[in-house]
Amino acid sequence: MPGRFLANARLGWSDPEDKWTAALEVQNLFDKYYFMSVSDVTTSLGLVTGAPGLPRTWLASIERKF
Image (cartoon, rainbow, N blue to C red; front, side, top):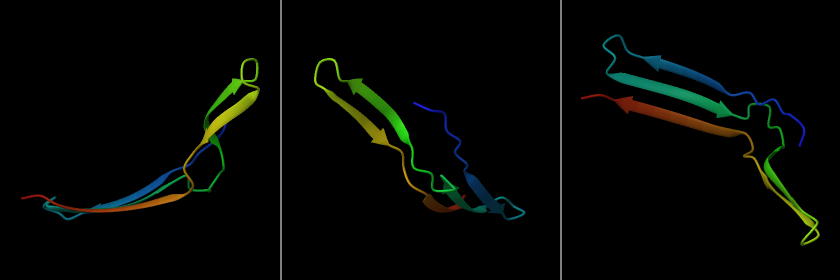
C-alpha cells in the first residue's frame, strides 16, 4: 500500500475568561481517497479487500464552562 499525505485544519476561539470556546475543524482537507487498510487473501479466497478512509469531514463545536 503506497504512502499518503492527509491534511487536517482547526480554527478555535475562546473568550477572555475562558468560559466559552468555539471551534471549526476539517478532516481530510483535500478530500483524498485512500484506504485505511487492505487485506490480501488471494492465496486462500482469491480476493483483496480494503476499508476506505473518510471523505472530507466538517466538525463544529461550542463549549460553555460553568
